[in-house]
Length: 250
Ligand SMILES: [Zn+2]
Image 1 (cartoon, rainbow, N blue to C red):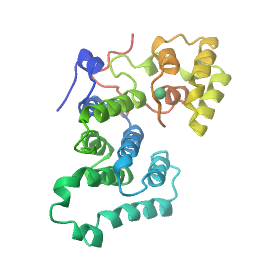
Image 2 (image 1 turned 30 degrees about the vertical axis):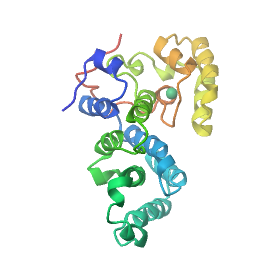
Image 3 (image 1 turned 90 degrees about the horizontal axis):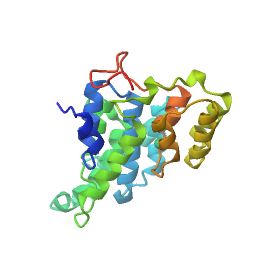
């Protein structure tokens, strides 16, 4: 069991699995958020996959949001399973030695498989932790860059579990303009509008420094960005009680 101290959480730069373990044990996550982490991390790994996984992962994202058609999900999963099936001729030819050298290519597809079928690793949380540590980079690349990119994904999807802004900011008190902006950003995945959202939030009385800094910072955002979710009132906590790690907000 991994539980991080507040300082360890703040300093964590290359251990996304530890952060996700902490979020899970603290109850500071939702199955949707964990699934979206799987999708975003699998999309990064997909650069090295032998399948075009981007289209398949859009189906997984839609499924995380509860909008995927079952037939589309089954078709996407079928594409990945076809690649991974031991009877696949291409893989059979490769059995000897290929996996030793190219396991990272296999893992890049396996990440997409888990994003589509998280129950393979028991649940969304275990799948997210698995993908977080999955070696999906070529041998001539150092792991640090990929692991720190996954940490950035965790920090975009999940608010700080020690001082969660969702305990301080009530989306019902924000202006309809801020809500409309957030809905538009989520619908279009147009995160370049986040600084405009920050202005609207300030105008409606939100001065939470973590929220405003996230909107105005230069980090990358993905579907499930915690600020957009907070404004839209998406559930941030998996359990009714936010867990022992949270301090109830500043
Ligand atoms: Zn974000």
